[in-house]
Length: 339
Ligand SMILES: NC(=O)c1ccc[n+]([C@@H]2O[C@H](COP(=O)([O-])OP(=O)(O)OC[C@H]3O[C@@H](n4cnc5c(N)ncnc54)[C@H](O)[C@@H]3O)[C@@H](O)[C@H]2O)c1
View 1 (cartoon, rainbow, N blue to C red):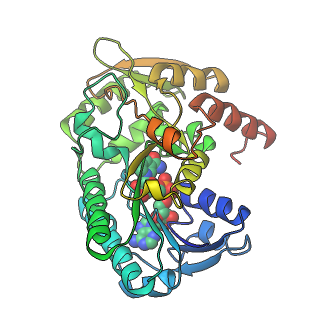
View 2 (cartoon, helix red, strand yellow; view 1 turned 180 degrees about the horizontal axis):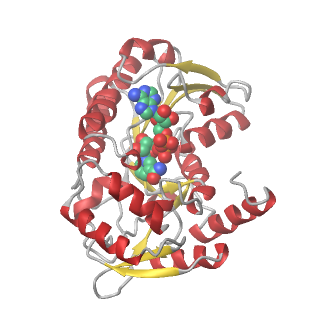
């Protein structure tokens, strides 16, 4: 199979390209021109095509003759981009890929679109697992662009016969990102990193401004972690996935006919407690943990990937704790320098 992977140099895309190459598929890796991770896929065996989702003319060569498209490229919340960017890249950009595929890939067998668990944001007031039957009620512009793009894919299926499948990953990281203060995930529990992030927010919400005050009050200038719990001291459950498992999940969606028109959550086998996660990192790195009680603590966020496990060849093999163990072992092997 010839597979186009957009966002190929990204966290999930890189693993997906390597997985497909290892299975003997032809991979066309698409991404922005200055992405070193994308360029590194060339020597690994992929055909590298550079371009921009917002410039439709750059997508013509990318889609030409492919059997499947795995569309991962997007503007993410982790980068603090503007709402305009979410609309331009995630909504218009997805339209551009679909339109290019309609014109240039007449034999396309599958278009796998990467949505997000952000589509469920406003329905999360539940302690139970959030599955694909939950209403799509995003609470952010990012989430709304993901719902909109899902509907665009469905429309292209109904109108033009492009068979699509939707992947909805939960928070997804490479292991090293969990223990690095400067990573987009590290700022969820490294105190000074969080202070820097919230201090630099262009348009912080009132809750974020109040959280920053609480974080600053806990800072004594030494490196420490914080466990964010609700005002009653209760820690939520969260879902956190490994980027290699997410890539395997997407791979599992490319071929089965039963996946056409379906959406699948992708995440770990079980959720974890936020407090346990932070305490585990603290133990492994030898850092103290402070508790911060604040209304900014996320509600329980237990994304179920049971449907993918039941209906696809998807078996998440890592937990957030095994990811941390792996990252700490990597750090030790590199003499304390990030790998
Ligand atoms: N990582 C997560 O926590 C998470 C959670 C839910 C959903 N997702 C979704 O999964 C997908 C992949 O996420 P990731 O974690 O690998 O992200 P990533 O930021 O590592 O990768 C995104 C890739 O898209 C590329 N890209 C961005 N704008 C582009 C444009 N205009 N033209 C071409 N390429 C462009 C970037 O260069 C990057 O390589 C995204 O669609 C994201 O919304 C990710």
